[in-house]
Image: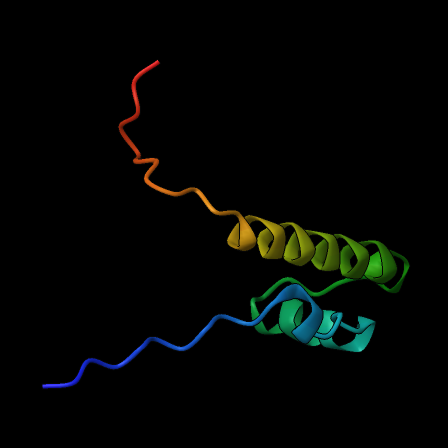
Length: 70
């Protein structure tokens, strides 16, 4: 019996930044149309959040569990 190795999640470098027209499309799809004057800010915020998530995914938490006592 062989076990398969789960695929490695993409690294922040492999995920391209969201472009403004893509942010507008995703927002509209979620029922949140964006005004043109907010599009750049929302796009930059989404890209920043994605980069933070990428850093968090790369952290090696070792054996730290959710119920660690202080």
